[in-house]
Image (cartoon, rainbow, N blue to C red):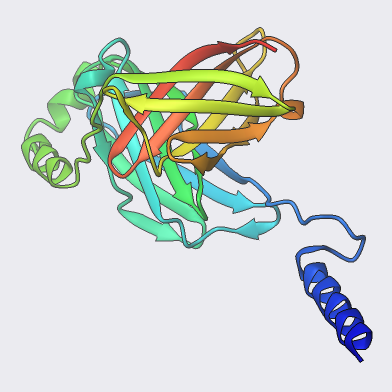
Length: 247
């Protein structure tokens, strides 16, 4: 009788374990999210411009993102940039409109957190001086101050601190320890952005927290000594660290 009960228990446990496997007997892999940032390459000052972030996961449209923000800064002046929340959403498409008042080269970065994953694509736009005849025609419509006030209401500041990242490979696992101002950085989202020799992004690797402040990924997702950008997100804290990971 005891042997029969033990055999039944083993069968039940084995059946439960199959719930975490697909029909081929392999663990189901979590699909990454993808973010397409749509922005014009150039525009004029005092011209209203629309920026769009389209979010997908595999073939699924992601219309339930936890957070979408657009960070805008003049080249070389990231610390004095501003971050805006979407003013409109259509399904998985998130929009803002913005008017640049000064010429220059600007960077626009979408910060998207959805389904416990994070992406931060960047676009560049060149703003030229508005043609004089157009500037005079629109001189009576000076709404810049009102636009700035509305932007400030939605501004989302990025808090910066002293972040230290230590990376090592142990038993085919990529282990990253993260500290902020000397303390272990717990409960953050860490994403590795891998770039090729030309600076183009070729792969994103989402890490999971193995224990407090220790984040883990698979060594097989990287190839040899690799220069990467590690994106760290926790609440309102957004930061990135450039690092070479050697095996």
